[in-house]
Length: 308
Image (cartoon, rainbow, N blue to C red; front, side, top):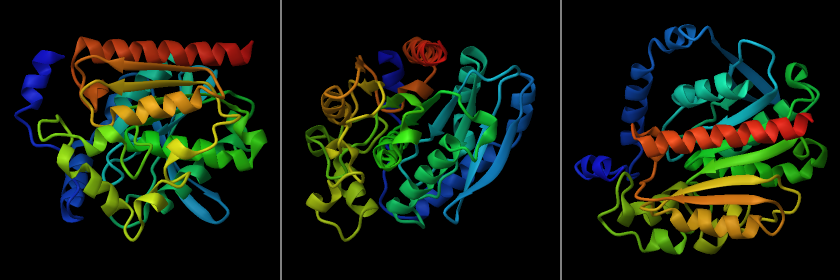
């Protein structure tokens, strides 16, 4: 991991300073995903894109099913700083979960903040969760659900779980939350405010301003209201969680602080991955692969426990 970090140090940091750059990156991402269906077919699988609707809000989802009968469902929220990304970008990670954990993966293709307020993204994710957990989704009825989110997706996953408290019967079907280096305080935790210029992957000094661009017109106090900032929510009745943070990530405090609050209501396992930067589960390192393997073992255990 340390050797890979030397390469990261030469690369530009991800920063949100305008709305044009994310659109360019998004176009390049989609171009690079051409042929993705063929990669799934190599494993005997395919993805279905479906548009679901809850209370009149239409949300696209991408569904990958296992070859055999699904024993559970993963509800996946992709990362990308709220401004880039799509449901297909996590196919390699989701494919491994489908094959090893024998689950179906429903990945939410929520709108992006280049054209939609962050509250709209949160509503997309909540609508997808309500559809999956309700009787309307007959295919997965009765199956245990694990919520997975990474980075901005971690924020959306946590916010969705807090919002689901309005529907306790739906929330009860969620048997676990697996969150990688999420953003849980949109006002910025201490590690975000103190982030130096030498951070990897993310532009440390620009992070506070990026959060303010995401939530224009709000004061820091308003940004810290839940579920906009999940860190300050009520974690009563939330499921057990596996929370993973990166030692070199400016968002380190987000995970440590939410773990402390979450653990007052449910079983929480939290790990700080040494010498790791933000986004490490996508890097070609043995440490990243080991973390993903452990995560899949945790998912399997949660599903097996629910099916007993």
